[in-house]
Amino acid sequence: MAFRAGLRPLTPTPDASEIFGLGCAPIGNLFHAVADADADATVAAALAAGIRFFDTAPHYGAGASEARLGRALDGVPRDSVVIATKVGRKIVDAAGDAVPSGGVGADTAADLSRDGVLRSLEGSLKRLRTDRIDLLYLHDPMDVDEALAHAMPELLSLRDQGVVRGIGVGMVWPDPLTRFVREADIDVVMIAGRTTLLDHRGEHELLPAALERGVGVVAAGVFNSGILADPVGTPYFDYREAPPSLRTRALELSALCGAHGVELRHAASRYPLRLPAVEAVVVGARTPAEVQDFVAAEHASIPDELWAQLDRA
Image 1 (tube, rainbow, N blue to C red):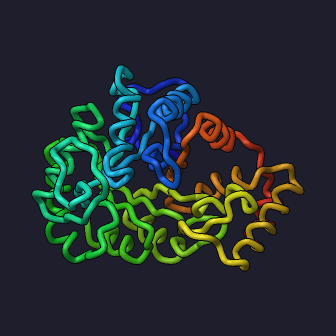
Image 2: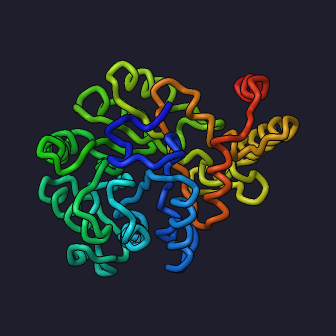
Image 3: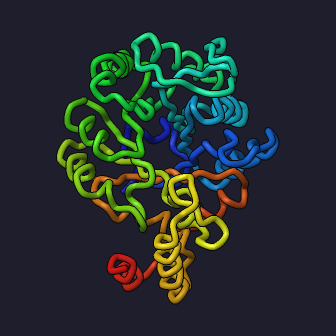
């Protein structure tokens, strides 16, 4: 599979990855604080490794991720990269008040209003130092009916006007995403952590619906917060400590991979691409070494026998 034509750079780069994108939540201080210089180095490493799809959001570090990505891409030919960001949340300061447009705050709050969509997009454009967004997601809309009634019409209008190239919805929960696939004219959904070696909930209804409707699927959260990257060193699932049963399963998967000379995290990165409707994978990274590692997954040799064993496990 590969990113669909509308989500590829307008100016292609030879040998650029067509299946992997960089998730920029980690450079927005997810789990750990990241220095500006380290964020710059991470984005630079991604560019050097052929990554051209960058996924961010106002929610990541309350604007910090967008601001850092914008600075790191400053000077890079805009048509050579694809930038995806999100709307549906407003950035607020410590007192809960909205920050000035383009600012960085302390937290975010839900805002599914039409005006909220436009204000969010305006702030993102300023932080990202760009005049356009390629893919605009609605971010974790908890009230699907409200989102369909208010936010979604504005996203459709932005696409119709050519302000954005594509629109979609990004969530952790497959059931609401399935409703968006069936009830809204969207291009893409991003499903986080539910099309992984440990969690298949996105595969039951969401992927068949997306395939039927021609909606692309971008898989994120492929490590389930860390346990599928390193079951011993980062035994976390869905942003919290994994229960013993999941640790045991992850260790079993790791042992199967090790018997074939394959890194578990490489298999985890590639797994969603075996599923119908999944077109690409976004992997978060906070260091150049992490970038280089997930890029290596694209070319890792993973035998069919191992995939069969992982499926059975």
